[in-house]
Length: 92
Image (cartoon, helix red, strand yellow):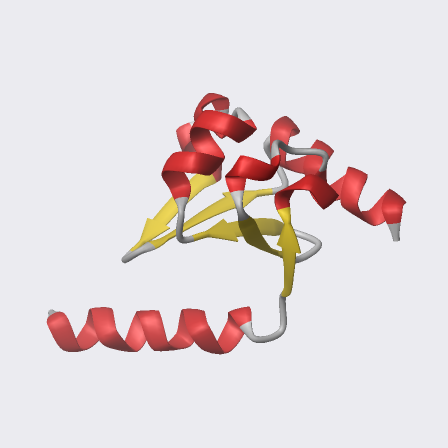
C-alpha cells in the first residue's frame, strides 16, 4: 500500500509541474492562505488548514474536495473554487 501511495504522490508532483503556483491574493483570497497550485479545473494545496480557514474553503462541499496524501484538491465545480479561478483568470 505504501508503494501505491508513493506512486500516486509522484504522479501528483508530475501533474503539478504543469500548474501555476499562485499567491492566494491573486485569487482574491486572504494572503494568509499562502500560495496554491491552480489549473482551469482545480486548486491544489498542501496547506489546507490556512486555505480552509482564511480562504473560506471549509464551506466547499466534500464531493468537490479530494485528499491525496498531503494534497487537497478542490474542483472548479464548487462555487467558491470557481470564483477564485475566475478572479485569477480575469486578472491575467
